[in-house]
Every structure is written in structure tokens, then in C-alpha cells.
Length: 133
Image 1 (cartoon, rainbow, N blue to C red):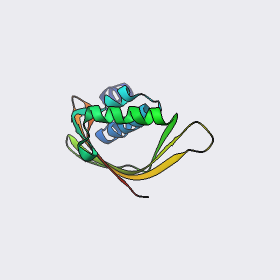
Image 2 (image 1 turned 90 degrees about the vertical axis):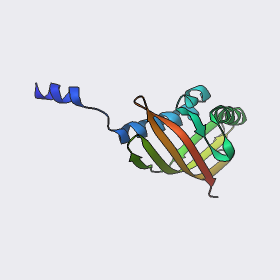
Image 3 (image 1 turned 30 degrees about the vertical axis):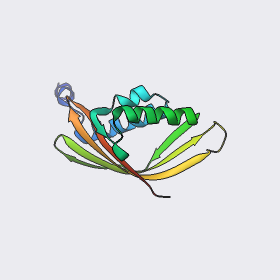
Image 4 (image 1 turned 180 degrees about the horizontal axis):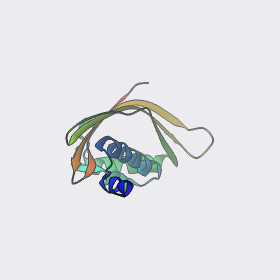
């Protein structure tokens, strides 16, 4: 009975939920689904050079047209949560290719993302990426 009561009260902690959302966003990109990617973006999303939510979807779509295979290898996530807002920092390797054994393109970026908890879901409010190589 105690185990049943404990399982009923168990909740995913905010950091674990945020890490899962970041993983879902990465999967949406790798699965070539810009619409699924966009669902994680807040309505007021802002990226590099004023990129908005629709621009992010179009950018993802253009990358998917350019590369048949697209993969993101994210380094360890540094997660800082303050109530309903969070910052996630990581290094990412973005690889793209035509499907052959070796990628045709690979770039390394330092990424900083801002997140907001909205109605129980984490939404990406901002992203800044800087090439490192």
C-alpha cells in the first residue's frame, strides 16, 4: 500500500522533464520533422540574428532538404533552473550528409538555450549558437 501511495505522488522533477524535452527536440530534428521541432518552441522564441519561431522551422526545413542525413551530438547538458525559467548550455556537433558512410559537413557549436515552463511543459524561448571551429 505504501508503494502504491508513493507511486501516486511521484512526479518528474523539473530538471528531468527539461532534459527529456531537450532530447525530444533533438529527436524531432534527427527524425526530419520540423513541425514536431516547432511544437517545442515558445510563441515568442528568438534565436540568432532575430530568428523567430517560423524562421526556425524554415531553417530546419532547409537543412533537411540540403542533407539527407542530419545528426546532432550534444555534449553534457548544464542545466540551471530558477522556478519556471531555465538555461541549458551544451556543446553540439551538427553533422550532415547524403547518406554515405562519412558526413559531408560537420560543425561544432557552443549553445545556450532559454526555457520557460508553460502549463506543465517546457518551451524553448531562446537559442544562441556560436561556431567554435
